[in-house]
Length: 469
Image (cartoon, rainbow, N blue to C red):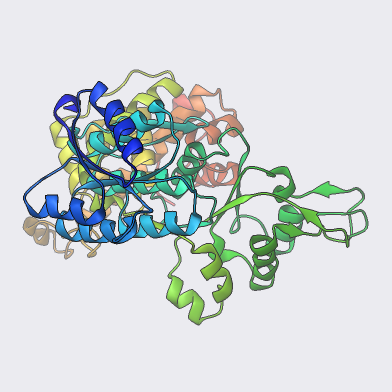
């Protein structure tokens, strides 16, 4: 609890020690002080176990960064917030890499101190409840596991430093959500957040999309058009799937990172911008560098700080919380009553490997909400006998199909569930295929293909669904 939390305050300025101690004791924290790094380390050696250490960066003798490094060795779990009267980017980044949880620039207001302390102490003490954090555009960041709470803490720290950040992780782990969180926690929060998916834009159009063009720059360029970098001036720009950007375009991006300037296509005029760049990718970085698909100089420029998102299979304790959150949001969105999440369904979800991560979990729950059939939802999560997710049960061998019968049954159940979801979406939208595709969150072309695949006829009340080709 807040009133019993122990805080070790380390600062070589007596006036600052008294000031911060007063702020802390007003809120009933138990405060001990030290005026040097050596004294702080001695207190730790003598058995002090603080919940939080507030540590000044610039001190005589052992400075704050060296003290932090030794603190992390002696008490790996202790939360440390660095204090400094200078917002030195290099020192902030170094402190992050050494494991600092946050950074306050003196002088600071009591509200700033309170927010940082609540975040740090709450992070270690709270029961896993995973309250969703709104990061804008109806997108939420959930940190309900130690790994994700650490990511959230690092994001809060790196948000305060205007450097590029490289976001790594498998597809569907939430890299865009993390980018939005960094933007929200930064000084640019009131400015534009913009995203470009480098894999979704054709290579010959990506340059004009990013940098804009002048009339006559290419066939069809009849008027001037600003690029995304111009439109995002003063804001935060996410380059998603950066590993798919053509190498020749990577050189121009490197110039923007170095000089914050570029020229539109067909123009010699230099445009200056102030944009914070975040980059996300799921590629194998060493392999991409070796194959020269990713420029080494660009990688090191983007890699001022890296955040690695763990896959869902490594944070399964979050699955019940994520399911509940997705159920609440989607029931609201589609105006449907929430469905129960039975112990059996939760157990099946916990056992599933979720190769598609959060995206797969979200789509699974959407199908369950639309179909309303728990048995079909559970069947979709059954282990497969092909080595991906499990093996067939022993009695399947009696079918004489070496497990093929169970595999076929699982696929048939999945096809039936998907076909039924499509039929219901079409009925709900009075067969407006465009609206049905939006409801199902698939492309219009994909919906037409699946309508043909499952033989769904418009006289829907007189036709049965077929799982055949």
